Length: 88
Ligand SMILES: [Zn+2]
Image 1 (cartoon, rainbow, N blue to C red):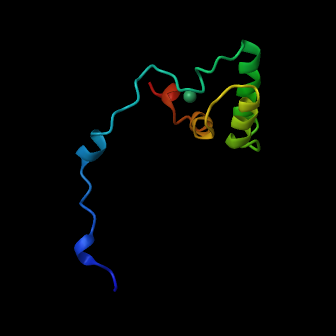
Image 2: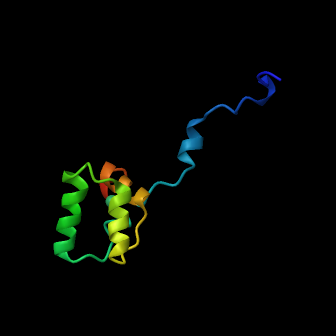
């Protein structure tokens, strides 16, 4: 059958968005909380913010090889500035 007009999604409401909990302000994301030495942190920041050709997946893989578990989604979010760290 064709388009089922009886199944249109419910309308969006502002309250739908407000109902989603906000990240805790002043917090930092899992990536910022990784147990890295200051030296390792410098290297990681360099890769994250100066080497865009290295993918979040590759970064997560290298970290995993160093027994540091973080998802590539977390890496990408931190890179985009879309994580807790960037919230006021
Ligand atoms: Zn972050």
